[in-house]
Every structure is written in C-alpha cells, then in structure tokens.
Length: 274
Image 1 (cartoon, helix red, strand yellow):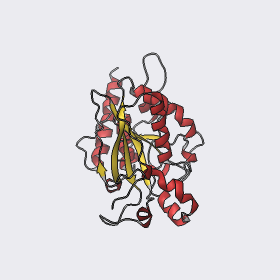
Image 2: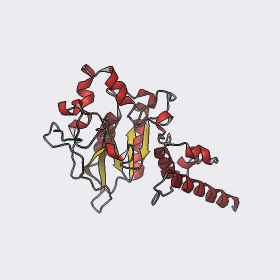
Image 3: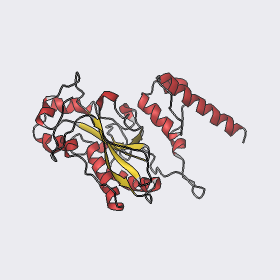
Image 4: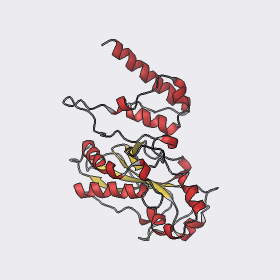
C-alpha cells in the first residue's frame, strides 16, 4: 500500500503515531484507520487511492475500547449501529492503516462521561441507517470526536485527517455500483452478518442505586460450546470484553472459546454457592 497525500499535505502511509495508554496529562483519544481496499501485495495501490480517495473504516479508541459504527440491513429499526471492539482488531491486521492521536482528554473526563455522550448519539446512528457514502463509520467517528471536543478542553488537539472520509465527499458523484457493493461487503457490520455487538442501550455500568441490567446480562455467554465455535473471532473478543475476560495469550480461536466457557462455569459455581 503506497503513500497518499491528505488535504493538509501530510502523508497517509501505514504507520502508528499513537500512544493510547493513559498518562498523567490525560487520556489519549486515538483514531484507528483501516484500509477497506486491501492491496493484493505490499506496495500496491488501487486506482481510487492513486486518485486520492481510498475507502477507509475508522474508529475512536478511548479508555482501551475502540468505538465505531456499522450497518446491518436486517436490524430492527431501533437497534444501535454503535459498537465497541478491541482496539486495532476490528478488521484483519493487513487492513490496519494507521493510528493518530487526536489529543489528550482531561482527567475530569471519565468513562462515564464517554458513555453519556454515546447514549446521546445513539438515536442518530441506528444500524439500518448506515450508508457507505452518506452515513458511514467515518461520519460517526467525526460526530463522536466533535461531541467530545464540544464537552471538554482537549490538550494537543489534532484534527481528523481529511483523507479518511474524502471518498464519501466526492465518490457519490461517480462511484460505480459494482465498487459500492464491493466496499459494502468489507465494512464491519453491527450484529447480523458482521458478528459485532452494538453497545447496550445504555452502556453506563450499573451502580448500587440502579436496577439497570449490566452489559454482561444483556449479552450472556451461550451454554452450548457449539454456539461459540461458530462465532467470528471479533464477536468472541467483544463478548470477552463485555464479560471482563482477558484474551491475553490466546492465539487460536479455540482458546478464546475455552476461556469463555471456563468463565461461564466459574460464574455458575459462584452463583450456586450464594
């Protein structure tokens, strides 16, 4: 995959300019970008990229989770298309393009603050409303970024690179239908065929003063191992994140399944002793 110039003149080549770990100065807000037009071999570029409007997927990584938006034409009208995933693993590794730190969030901005903003956004980002050019993941990333920037003061603020969603701004005039359909097959989807979970209707974790269901109650681990074995790896990892199960050291898909089944068994045993 070759280099591509952004409107600001910076080179958009595969690299990692982020440091997503929290620091004493604040929590990094990191843009993760994926190339939907995976090259056949290293160094190749599509015609679109050579013309300066490649197709990209993006998400915002904050507090160790990557938030993004995906579509699902079979979803219920009220189902959210917003989902959280393991950072830099939304698409295959060879489609990861770059990370860009967009700024540092103040220490006063907590995960609860982020959940409140996402809850507010959900009404405008239903899974059925996704459109590759008019209402896509990059539009959501910009909307989430703008909502956060409007709520708090960001240190070392950097704008989202303009190349990320350039195709949506210009391609609607002349993109061939075949290319549109090809790109749609590569875009992450929420629930449905993409296997990704949207966040709970209210992602804020429950407290002792509320009866709201916890995320893990809304997304239980199936009792049948076979149900886990047919899930995509991304869905397994999302399920692990929801239940607080570490995937460290897991290489094979079967290891992810083993760890989820073991966690479910421990929970059953713990509940039985209460």
